[in-house]
Image 1 (cartoon, rainbow, N blue to C red):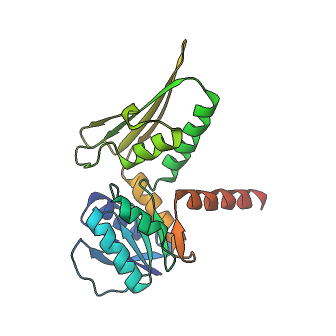
Image 2: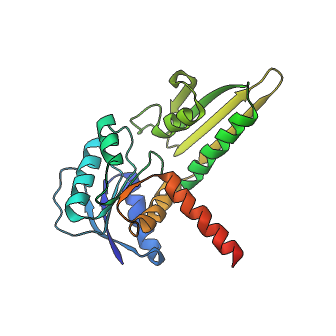
Amino acid sequence: MKKVIINGANGKMGQAIARIIAQTPQRGLEVAALREAGQQVNQKADIIIDFSSPQGAQEALSLAQEQKAACLIGTTNLPERFLFQMQEEHHIPLFYAPNVSLSVYFFGELLKKAAQMYKGYDMALHEIHHVHKKDAPSGTAKKLAESLGLPPQRISYERFGEVPGTHILTLLGGYDKIVLKHEALSRDLFADSAVQVAAWLVHQPAGFYTMQDFASFILKSSRKDATV
């Protein structure tokens, strides 16, 4: 079993990830330690999973480099300098995504196809998240907008209740309107995907990885299974 340190373990995502790792031993992971920003840990890990804060994410990467462990960072609102630093990593397997859900990644690919097919339509993106979310618009919304060539002013947002995450693209033509929506029904959508990514990442060579790399692996595996 590969040992995991969960950074940001007291947060809702950290708790969900710990629970899902315990529920899915077939993925080959087990929790070695739970950590919060500023804490020292003596346990060794094969991978560190971080959903904490910008400071916590930088600590998680430093700890992973020190232990020569893989590192998965899903924390959003990170400083630009740190984002560039991550992209240059070549000593450990390092994965970063503002949204670790494979479902959301494929939704983004659908939106890009829709934007190509409905050329000339006006587009706007709206996102809804729980009241505890600190960044607005969300990292996911910014990433989707960037991939569509949408300026930031075309992103609107709401914060209420305990909504895990909803993203809506509206395409408006002269005579019709198309609405494409992804709605997460539970935070477990993201936690389960993070555990899947971690189980894959821990076996990868050193380098920087994104959701595109993981999605390519999943699609290749699906095609392979279909030919068996």
